[in-house]
Length: 221
Length: 221
DNA sequence: CGCCACTATCTATGTTGATAGTTAGTTGGT
DNA sequence: ACCAACTAACTATCAACATAGATAGTGGCG
Image (tube, rainbow over all chains, first blue to last red; front, side, top):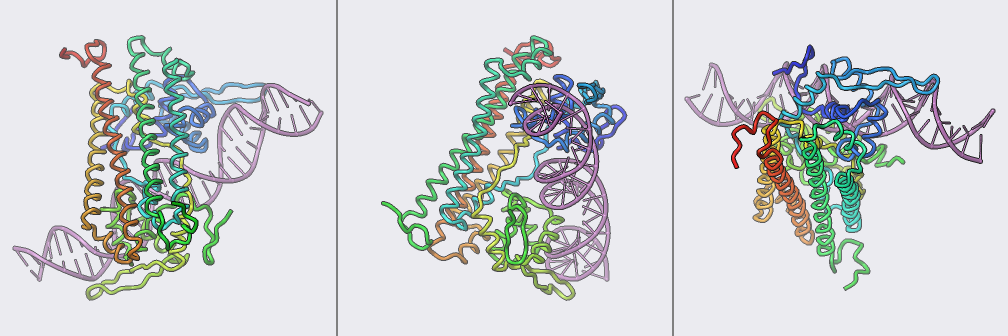
């Protein structure tokens, strides 16, 4: 069942989210490939990330399909860059995606795969894994909390520009959904941290005064 | 910094988890590609999944690299299949991976990307998205709870075979880590369900008796 | 002036993953 | 005897991502 937008044919709306991440950003204001790349490196990058080598070709494809229009912009003496703005077809494509329910893909989770076989690891390596999990999610958590603070205090550049182009009646919705998103990510991070903490306790317990694995030699208690 | 195992060279241990998922399963007992495929389709598939078209070539590669050894097994009159068993080098590679701290990859999360722009969706489509999120994670949760029950009641085929080949002193560890893994996944599912439920409430609240979006026509209260 | 960090874009290559389809033998039921 | 469902393995193609590197202009600092 193909979906026709304008004069192009999209097979399967499922996935290909990079495209929609780009449309989301370009729905706010025109940007160059480099601008988008920078966005993915920072703020938005905590929800979606892509390398420039994926962004530039995708932008060209999207222009060819009529979702974007690009214009040459001079920069300095000889420099030039290509700034893309979203077309009506692009807006429609994005809205279409937003109104389509996502299909979820199969689980593929290295951290939990490893956890399921943790008895293979030396106790200290197992602990290190858990600590890394905590550290990783603590970092994410911090960034997301930061973003929530920015939303609450209207200190987000991107969001303010987005709000400026939004009818007054819809502004609280924009903010509410953003906040909602980041709250979910904070809660997820908390959960992961608590899980790994539980893991640390479990490891201590399982390897407490037990001989066998060269390791627990100088165990205390 | 290359890592040399036996006579082969692995660049970067990061990722390529399919290989280690296969080693994990083959550490329990020899299996054919089809066996492994079936495992990924069912029990283990909830932590890791791969299509057969990825499994067969990977097994051949692993044999070429000395991590596995395959033997032809006849099956019926003319039928044959190839059963792989893990080699010492394979065991070492797996243990090496288990003792190496994972590198975490950048976030790429379609569900939260959509959530951040949910004001673009029609209210009913937004609700549908949240319902799908709840349904998806409820399904996962069920399967994981099921697995926990199997662990507690020693009703898991795979796990029992694994325990049979494990020194008595380590058996409670094997079970404890498995349980720990699935507990974490259940907790994650719970969190996602709670988040989406919160989302449903938020949508109701944001679109309650507000004109504008053709939709809230016959709103109550 | 020369250097360096940054802006800007592009190419190349390899891996992983998703989807679909092909071939061939086996087993069990009607 | 035949058919369906399953076992077994392989091939082809395409999208998605990662990684690395090439090229070239800009702007500021010492």
